[in-house]
Amino acid sequence: MKAIVLAQLDPAAPLEITETAIPDIAPDEVLVKTHALAINPVDVKTLEDYTITRDGQRIRASAAPALDGVSPVILGWDIAGVVTAAGSDVTKFKAGDAVFGMVRFPGHGKAYAEYVAAPASHLALKPDNVSFEAAAGATLAAITAWQCFTQHYAVKPGDRILITAPTGGVGHYALQMARHLGAYVIALTSSANAALAIELGAHEVVDYNAFDPATATPLQLDMVLDAGGRNTANWFARHLKPGAPVIYLPSGLSTAEQQRYLDQGLNVAYKYVISEESAIDDIAQLLQQGNIVTRIDSIFPFTEMKKAFAAQHAGTAKGKIIIRM
Image (cartoon, rainbow, N blue to C red; front, side, top):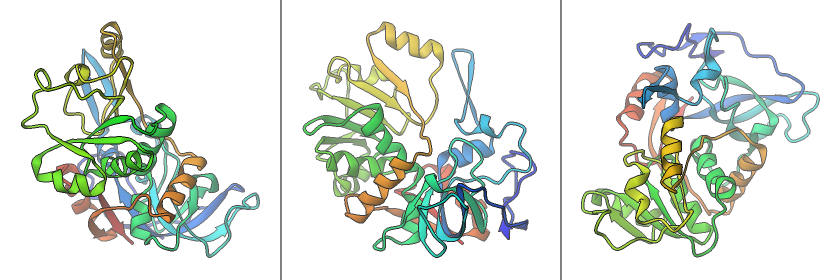
């Protein structure tokens, strides 16, 4: 089969297609012939063995530690395709089913390949009204937002939710989900992205270039979902209701940072997504019912993965960057 196989994590890796064996499947797995993939910032960060330094501590991309010592590496987690074989313990799917999901995150998903061996519990049936490309997009990014709104904080009708980077991969799903759950949704973005944020479900747009958090009328927020990582929690503090969480997604928080925020009375946490059957099944239902849609920024062929990585690294995508097999 065709795959992008790396001897090691290296930002200079050419990401060229090679031939390798079709993987075997375990009793609880299915073999999926991939039709589309999605890439995410964590793909780029993991390739670079990405670290940040805060307060003298090095914090790594959430998926990178799971690949320590692994060789060869096949990157990627987000797939959509068709089941070609099912393990002996699998009852959820059969050969010929169209499926999608996020495979083994955090871990070694091995998604940049023509065939992927995936735990059946990490996949859902692809709704008939959704393309393979749109389904592939609604995996890591969509599950991240959904877990934040249903597990890390339970969004209630009338909650005032502020979302940063609201037109990016996670953010554009988060806007739609928060609106679907009955929240009053505020998008923190540039004026250039305001129209798209409104289209995706924002009730209100705050222009971060014009907004002064120290003097503006308090926004009275029940939650902040920071998908952009532009501001510290102190930037939001004056606008939070007592105990309102600020959930960070793009990078980790050091122990010292977490303690400092706690000492200031701020409820701040870093969360990362995990593969979970109930979450991907929920996403399938949201897609089926039209409660969320995938906005596709661009589609690259599998042969142009390096260009897709460059586009993801630029950080300007509106919606998802998709790979078509």
